[in-house]
Length: 142
Image 1 (tube, rainbow, N blue to C red):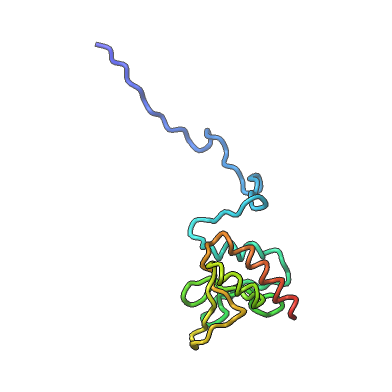
Image 2: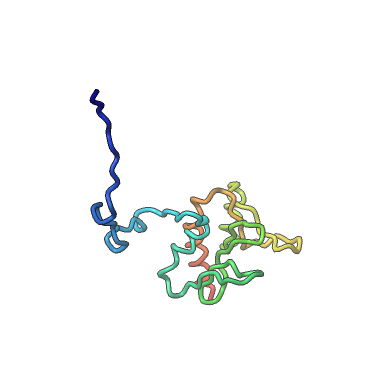
């Protein structure tokens, strides 16, 4: 009796197509924002400012400002201790976002809302553009 059986043969690494090296891969960063596994939405905001020499990325410490982007040494966007995305904008712009239901005024825990600081509640898709607005506002105020 003759049987037909298929044998699975694994090829060695040298017989397979070579892996693409990182420099051969095209970057899609210029056309869209993608998150790496384990990255947060705030990481995408930080990456958006990576090439700007006036912007300082967040530090490694704890406390107010440790998870903040700064321009000329001043905070313009940050993640609060309550994991909220916060930006500094002109008070009229912050009021507009609050009225539209896309933000709340930021309270640093002292019971008083800060009129130029907005906690963005309208979705992560707004974060980079609002961070850009905040960066321009804070840089101009310097």
